[in-house]
Length: 219
Image 1 (cartoon, rainbow, N blue to C red):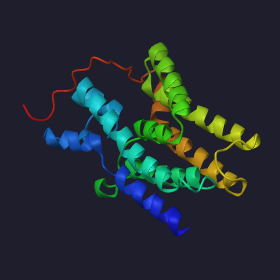
Image 2 (cartoon, rainbow, N blue to C red; image 1 turned 180 degrees about the vertical axis):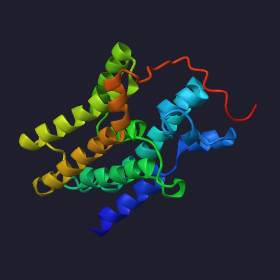
Image 3 (cartoon, rainbow, N blue to C red; image 1 turned 90 degrees about the horizontal axis):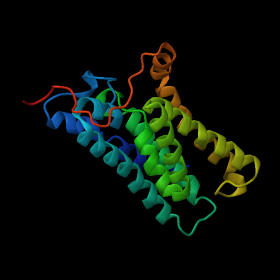
Image 4 (cartoon, rainbow, N blue to C red; image 1 turned 90 degrees about the vertical axis):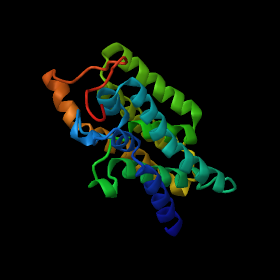
């Protein structure tokens, strides 16, 4: 349990590095006061422009990839628990991103950080996830819808892997792995609950990749 707690803590510290918040503060404002009030990449794009959104996306993905991949390397000789410990680290990253302690536990929704986790876990899974995400965005232009459907895919794959005995961990850790594998995408879907309401009402904003941002911050 100590090793799990340590991985969770390391992940949380990395996840708490709020790329969107830091970038907005450098521009003289708090991004949580604008748009959807999230510190994530989508709100950063809408508030600060396309370039800033891309930078936040990269930063949020890297802060998940680095600790998760480091833990994977550390447990390289323990194939029975290697991926399980990676998921505990990922859990810390997502919790840190969503609920940073120094920002009143107001962060993002964990979508970009999920990309980093998946890259550390399995590149093929990351490509599948990103493929679905991009298809939904291109068809609907709703980032929130793409995010939730992509998270739902992870839940389905995790349950299917457990039923088929194909999860990348030892049998005695399979239930624990599945619990974490379902919890993380479910948390992201729950964090999108306000988006679900706007989608149902037809008031959800569509993505504009050429956004110049809002006129806030330093002149």
